[in-house]
Length: 238
Image (cartoon, rainbow, N blue to C red; front, side, top):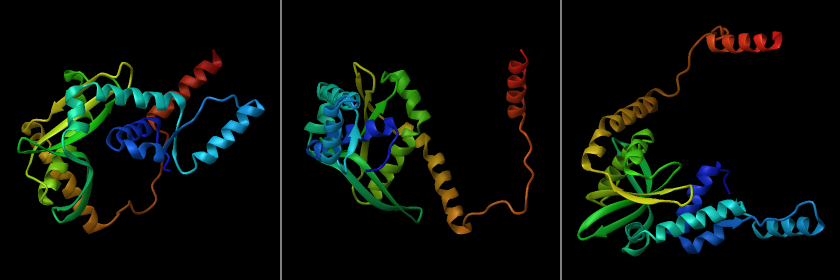
């Protein structure tokens, strides 16, 4: 299994737990709390490592956190409908071209709701899932850029037209508040120039190839490093 940061591991585990519950136990294992100093504890740890070989390992606290977040989602009517109840496809891989570049994306759920084609995306948030805070999160983490790219790719692959992009946001901290947000068309359109610019830069890179600076350049001590050295010297002389 790949090595993830704690945040990525929790997010990935939650996606699997919510979207592919039957696969969760095959892909993840919760480390039991044992006293590694004792013979019994060492034996239990060794047995766990054999049983969990090839799986992503969650600590006891992480496993409890994932289950609590999943329970919060299941207790939220709209979130549960979007991610579990309404007919749809989970973790849909999309292959298409954008400005001649072969591209791949994977949407959490693709649904048909009252004749509308909807992409639903599950997001974990470190702080608040409240509207004002999540609006800032959308811009800080380029969620609108992701939504626009997924929508364009789905349309190009014949899976559209995509009518709505909805995000289910769940807080990582207890009590794991949940909120659902539809990204309005104006949000996606606002990210259009940024997405087009990024694709153009990537195209330029593909055409020119990696280009580094030629010759040998001198590196000096930057101003911030000088300030740190002066501060350390002052503390030493104090």
